[in-house]
Image (cartoon, rainbow, N blue to C red):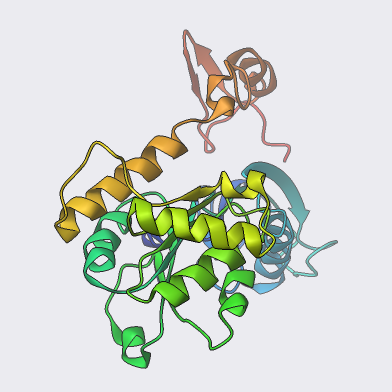
Length: 299
């Protein structure tokens, strides 16, 4: 698509979908674009260009194969244009393909009432992807940010629940208690839903728990059921107060991440210096790589 790569990166980050950023690292011989040229590749689209033709086709193909893994990764690959890309210019291009996984934090919101209308603008500014459901067809015309996906609740409620991504946090905020119960039960019957939070009261919670046990939901699964949803310290009943309370509870749960205690991630500084010493100038805690004046031009 005719959109600069740097704007496309921002769009992809807001949308929460996986994407790849491709950078031309080096060239030799006759090549379509110079080092530093970039493009963005998603599962369905491309933005900007590294020269088009068979080279871009091959790079796009490899990037999409990497995106299927939904992992954050870096791959550096050389493409001999004559031998592999069948381009008559005959040069060689080395590219770096950086893949960025889809936003891990997935939230489903059922209902578009007063609380949801206050909650969605807050979630639209959070690093999450939101699947927002309601029964009314006119709901689909609501203007929302790119990380909010509007969905209609089907007649068969379980079909909506089946489509939710694994590890979703589910918020059930409708004004229909019967619908709330069906959604709650369907979500708890999936063992890969992280949280099932339902708006209501302690009385509603107790009634739901008794019915859920009778309907075959086991005790461990009930541990994922939170009703009323929101931090208990907030007693306010205004929609904005409830919305902020719910969002605070979600954030608190997200920040309890055992992996965040790891001391080291990615490539160590020692390995970077070792592997880049042939192509860059190392000075103290910096590595300078000038593609137009590197130590090696062998490709």
